Length: 385
Image (cartoon, rainbow, N blue to C red):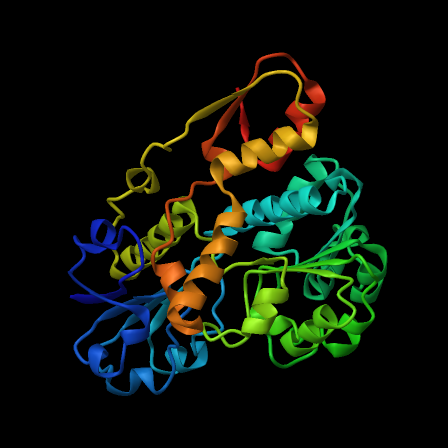
C-alpha cells in the first residue's frame, strides 16, 4: 500500500508507516501525476481534491483531510468513485478557542476596555463555536449564539433553543462578533459573504469583528472599505479570501492579522493526524497501534505559579502569553509577506510555524487562594493545581 501525505502533516511517518509506504509532498505540489500509483491520500486544506486532481488516480481508495473544514474536497465525486473519505472535525477546535481568547485579551489591553464587560456574539456554534461559548460562559462573559441549522435540528429535540438568536439580533446586541461557520455557497443556510457589504456598513462603531472560520464568509472588500473609511470598528482576521495571495491593504488595516494559524497547536495538528490514521485503520480493518499520547511530548513550560498583586485580566493575559502570544503571529505575517511577497510569505509562516501548545498543557498554581481568579483561569481552559 502506498500512502501520499502532505509534507506538513505532523507525525505522519509514526502513524502511517506500519500501514504501508509513506510518500511526502508539499500540499501545493500534490498533482494528478503524483496520484497515479497512490492508494491513500492525506491532505490539508490547501490541497483541492477534485476531478482535476483525481484524473489519473486509478488506485486511490481513501482520502483523508486533517482539518475540520471539507470545502476543499469534492465529496460527491469521491462517493461516486467509491473512495472512502474521512475528516477531522474538532481536531483543532480547542486551539482556535485559545486563539480567540488570546486575541480578545490583547485587544482589551491595547484599547483599554475590560474583557469581562463585553458581550460576545458567536456565529456558528459547532465544534469551535460551541467550545467558545462554553468557555466564555465559564469565564462569566456574556455571550449569544447564532446557528440557524442547529436551531432547526433542535426543534426536533426541544433542547437549547433559548440560547440562540437570529443574526440581526446578535449583531445589534453584541460588542464582539466571532465567526466560526463552515463555508456553504448555496442553500437556505449559505455562509458565503454571510457578513456582506450591508451588514458591515451597519456594524455599530466600536464593534470587534473576529473571523477564525472561513475567509469567504466575510466580504473582504467591504470590510476594507469600512476600516479604511470610518475606521471605527476593529478587525481580527486569521482567515482570508484568496489565500495565500491575500489583500495586503486589508492585512495592514486589521488590528490583528494572522496567516490561518488559529488551529495550529501541536495538539490540534497531531490530533488531526491521529483521527485520519484511525479512520484509515478502520477502512483497512486493522486495530490502531499508535495512541494520541504517543505523539505528544511534554510541554516546554509545564507549570506557572501566580503570586498576589495581579489584576484578574492581567493574570489571564500572563497565562495566555506564557502559552501563545498572538502578537508574534501578527508580526510574522507582516514581516514575511513584505520580505517574500504575500503568497510566499503567507505560506512560509504556516510551513515554519513555531511550536505552540494549548492552554490545557499549562498547570497554573495560585500561591494565595483566589476563587474568582481560579474560576476565570479554569474557565479559559488552564489546569489549576
